[in-house]
Image 1 (spheres, helix red, strand yellow):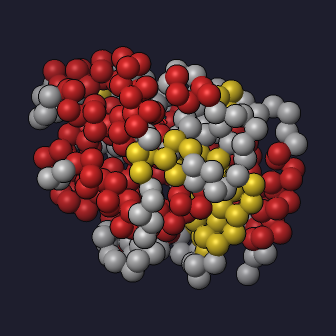
Image 2 (spheres, rainbow, N blue to C red):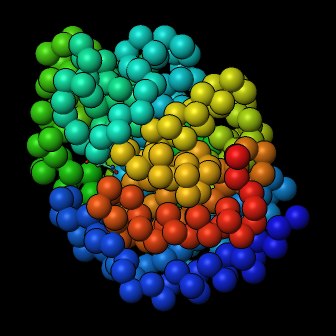
Length: 304
Ligand code: GLN
């Protein structure tokens, strides 16, 4: 068994000293206020032992990481009918890219780019009675943590500046792949991006994808095949146009967000989350990627 505690401490020490920390996302005003020096790592193993170091208890905006949670809730509700509304191919483009290639006949390339998540939100509006409350309650239920919530300042900040997302939603709607009005779909989408969590909470939430669909509370929301598919999508599409690089350097399925968080997992072994708000030029946390590369290199554990 790996000595996660000392490995994480060592990685935290080395990474914390890096002078090039990337750049905090500033296109969402509320995110630009975050201190670039924050660095947290948390790991939860298959025996429910947890390890954490640095700022692992400080909440941040999980942003696009929530796209995996939207996807999993929609998948649990409608199963494979989901794939009539979106594809599962990596885009090789930035998360907010808006081209016809990204959206062939109104079908987004995958559920983890903005266009795909917007369609997932539309599906959930149809299948949830109280979408915002039901979504946050799903996250609370799979993690057993009732303190997880939306950050309404972030949701508001995104709503005021999310012009690209309005454009994407309108384009999708023009192709007939949104059943609800653009404002309601985006209101739900912006709220989902604003969910705030710390690294320790993120690993509890993502335990379900590490543990064959059984969450920490032992409830079975997803079956083994659905989890296989969600993990495959994370591996191929979880890091925008840097998914190949993440697989190459780290070798785990995972998902990043522009709030600087990354969560990744080794099926049946562990789930790990990092937070460092400085992003690289592809929009992924610069030091988070480095920390995860060191983790899989030093433990010799990856899906490959
Ligand atoms: N809320 C962000 C947006 O839609 C999410 C982007 C991200 O984390 N990649 O622009």
